[in-house]
Length: 228
Image 1 (cartoon, rainbow, N blue to C red):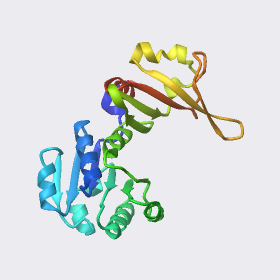
Image 2: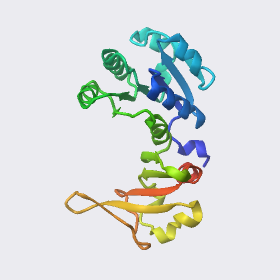
Image 3: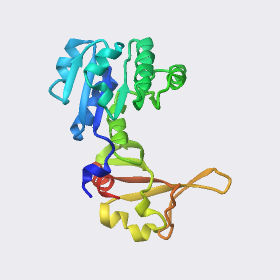
Image 4: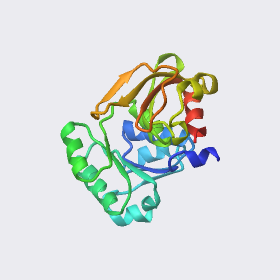
């Protein structure tokens, strides 16, 4: 199976190119995704035009323009309009009515609740650097979060693949095969609570487990791209 078949859909639109949207769009493009970057500011669109597949300036609250520029063909749209929250909500709702998966950006918990009520599948409340993290978390299947640490080491919160179910950490040999350390594991109890602990070599991976791994960006992304 090719690497591309194991990754999440590779056609994304990012609407709103503030610090978060700009970093998210450029990071997705670096990872090989086809990215449509949209903003109403021609200057920002020009700045990002050589970093993504397509960059367009238009009024994104116009449904006909969204369709005309191919937004309806995207696998995921991220709405990251920072200065006009009303536009953020409107575009989120328009895109959901078009049947698209939509993640939206909020600056407060109140805004997050409104966006959720408007249909957003996921809401970000990002700091400036979070765009790169979120790019990785939506590029690879099963990734809940992805955080770059110091010294070239990254931390990924992942869900195991079906090929890993009922196998022990000893069997899977994360360190030998991928250069990764499983820092800890989150497992559901019979009562439905998730308990986190340092795993043992003979722990068998279960479908509901959460794994937290440490390694270089290259090693983590190689593991995520190649696993079944």
